[in-house]
Length: 256
Image 1: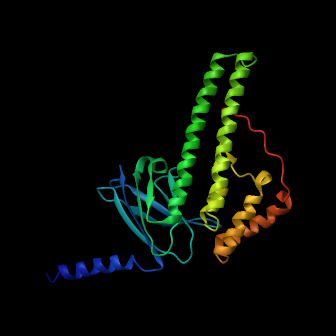
Image 2: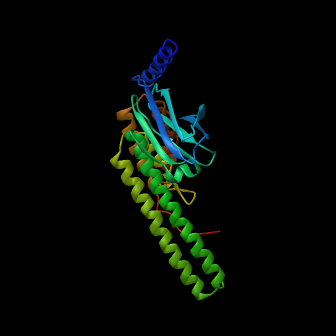
């Protein structure tokens, strides 16, 4: 008992230490995660900064706590191409579940309003990727069936372009609604930089007003946040180029 008491006391201190008001706690259990390592970075306005590695136990469980001097983004990843972005607030206990082998596609999050908003964005982006994959397969099928100069191919191409335009517009509508509905949240920054088929969904040369809207919201809710200050400088640099509305881009699908 004399040896056990200090150990239990130390564990209790750790548990209490992860619940300070200026910290957030991240925990979860991931399928196929036994013994694997996750990495966490802070996504600062100047780029990602590595913070720590997180070792999962033999059940794929992990727990991590970190001080949060200001609201910012965190990148949790198992590889360079498989990652999720979190947006914690002080005192939040965030729970993450999913498959460690396909984290970006399978994860779910709870316990954090900002992180849940980013999950919703990612979930819709995944849907867009699925649509693009189907379009690529359809386009490849058309190319194999028809001569590129044939009327049949041109009609098939027109149909594919129509589906692509509709899918692209759905992405624009979703992100535009997201920005308006969650005005003042840092999550709107991630929404603003979302892409569809390697093109900005909210292109500044077409929809610069949304850049202004995001900035107005952030300046009202968190004017001193480093992300707000950095974004304000970006908007000021873009304003003289894209301050006047332009015609919408004519979108066609190229599956190559």
